[in-house]
Length: 636
Image 1 (cartoon, rainbow, N blue to C red):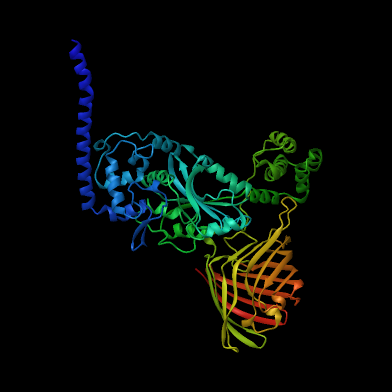
Image 2 (cartoon, rainbow, N blue to C red):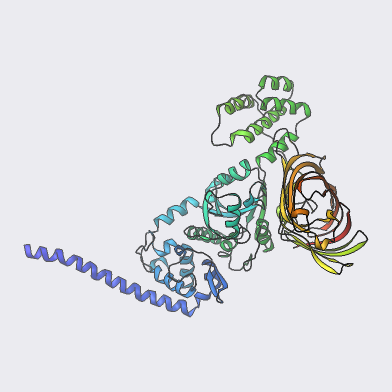
């Protein structure tokens, strides 16, 4: 009896081992059969497989190479450079329920690849061993995506990494209804740590930061961009099928496990969204190759160029845009009442609003509360003084039976895709001090105040890595007119509620015409920074006055350098729908080095008959130098 029981006890593990071995043998045989079928179908070179792995053709000795630079994105040891090896590892992984280096089996780590392979190999879930994909399935239930939108955040000149804008994807939850703030987002960004200033610029330009795809709630993005940074959002709903939305969610899970290269100018937050979308859109190529420069607005143009991909466009104004628009609905007397409430003088506000209809008093209180939110309440730590300021406004508003008035979008609000393209090429000719010249110029980005304004943030001029070449007909010589690294001008008209300064910064090579020497021998390297005030010129433009510190270095200067300052004045005006003008100038004084004054004045007029074509005339006075030119511009 005892011996029989012991024999049974030792026989069970042996039997289990035999069953597992037999199952493993069958799985191995089935895997080999699937591999043979995959080779027969040439799936390793299928464009869909290459897109799911983010392979780029011809980047590794003429062979495809994966863009992800972490081993977590691949199963095979040489998967980054060998699509066939990675395909073989993935097919074998379909039949292996045991976790590998990661907590979950291969088909749970890479559900989009698994789904595509199962479809192409005609495999049903019942054909594969059971696998515990609970970690992915729990995440998938929380995501619950039913639609996808591309979100464009307008430019933010106070942050170098966002001065050209930003794009990310919104994964819209099926059960959220119209509560879009409850959706999730897919965002690509560099992991920069605490770096800032010059170190951030150098590492960002040199690709020294890892980039990560992350998922976070949409309300957090709205809080950051809409409320704290005062950036308007444009939401482009994409016409994806339910199957494509599901596949994108699967692929988001895969990408979240890896790091990708981040380059500030090229493989940045916007570019990396395109391979993610192309992986689930096999019939569309949104951004061919790897362009050397990619801006956020380029990705908007890319999805719009693909026929039928954009289903709808929605504008979500920033809190500051809404605040100014709502305040614009008030009469001067009502504005004084709102000003009293926002300053913590509710009794004065009551007196000024006395006798007004309930809807007008509600509008006054809403405008005052907008200011309190703008100034303080979007901070995570709200001071009691702020609550004391907010409380009387909310108590009075709660007593009024009047709906909140949502102001219409401001006249200047236009989708970024309606603005001119980022790059500008211009060719022209002109005269100078009795001579003449021909000029060729190119700017990779982004926008100047003389360009057609439609589709761009008012008052923001951002130009980088631009250059101008000239051929002087009298000297019969080609020379560099200028080669700029960056020039930024932020014109924020004075507002008693916002009080933002206007400012400028710029650096690069420039021709020192004021020295009176031949232009081809007058190239210097200059830099400037300044701040000041600006004011609106009605609804058509703005004017500014800036105190600027500036310096330059070059062999053409006496003592090889100069350091001084200037008072810069300017105005930009929309003359008519197609006509725009800029007048600016400066009075300078040099404190050190070459003391030659650098007084200057410029007037420019731009006529834009279409979005991406323009004709402009410019006239310049700089010291003894005089010139005028006519230029044809092509935006591309």
